[in-house]
Structure formats: C-alpha cells, structure tokens
Length: 192
Image 1 (cartoon, one colour):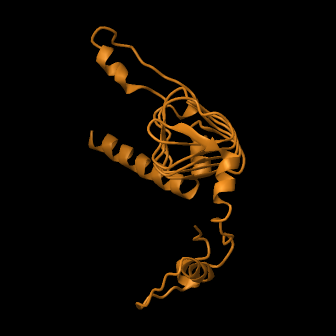
Image 2: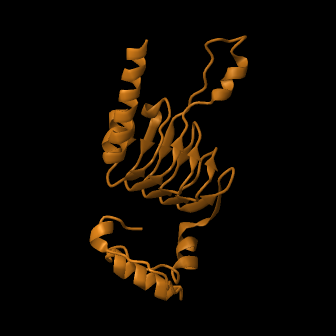
Image 3: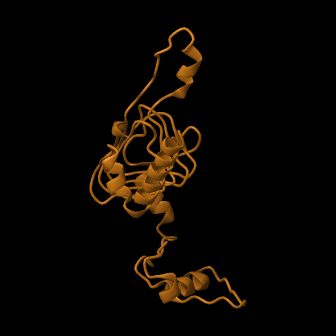
C-alpha cells in the first residue's frame, strides 16, 4: 500500500515537472490535440484530455478544460453508470485569459479573446471578445482593437530593464526606493 502511494506521488511530481518544462509536449502526451504556435501556462485538462482540441496560435494561462459534468452524481443511486461528457474545441488565434473555465461540449471559434475569470458554458462565435459568468460576446475583435489601439505598447522584445523604465515613464510612476533590476539576474526570458 505504501509503495503504491509513493509511486503515485512520484508520477504526479513527474507530471507537474513535465507540464512546467514542456507544457505542449505534456498536453500532447496525455491526448490533447494541439495545433502550431500555442502557449500553455498552468493549464488543466481534466480527466478526459483526449476530448480537448486546440487550434493554431492558442494562448491559455491558468485555464481549466472540464470535459465531464460531475453533477451526474445525483443520479447514480438510480443509474450507477451514468456519466455526461462533451468535447471541447478551441479554434485558431484564441486567447483565454487567466482563470477561464471551459465546460463540456463548448466550441470556441477563431479570432476570439475570452476575458479573465470567464466561465464558458456555451459556444462562442468567431471574431469576438467574450467575458463574464457565463461568458457572453460583448464586442467584435475589430471593435476591441479600435477601442484599445491607442493603449497598446510595443515593448515585447525590449530587455526587462528598458521595458520597466518605459512603462514607469508611460504611466508617470516614480519608484524612489532601493529597487534594483538586473536583466542578467532576472533573465532575459522573463517577458510580460
């Protein structure tokens, strides 16, 4: 019994490490269908990862894909084998914000932004921004761009120190403490 528990813990630790070091490879290894140029950070695919399909250029951070409805539990006295599943399909060029939950049977179209904390319980059409609980489209993707184009910054490839200085100046913030920022110590891979 102890050995079985220890083996289970080691496997779980390996899975966590693997999902951190190679999240795309880990997701594919557990059966998720994933397109090209995706970014996954802290994503949970539930107990049926093989029911999840992600298109090309999908970004998801701290997102849960839930492919079964556990509420079937309440019917198990009468129907002990009852389960309810649904595949999840995410299109191309999709951004899923932090904390998004996608429930069984959902299809998310192409060119979609789903805002942080949204719970997606129904299909989301292409070319829109969807937010809320439950997630609903609130505007087109073109409208999102138009409304925010004056707010976007172009700092993606800047070194961290230069990015910090640029953003502090942009937002008229002044930090007078003893902050230090050494790009070599922080690492060039850290980018917002």
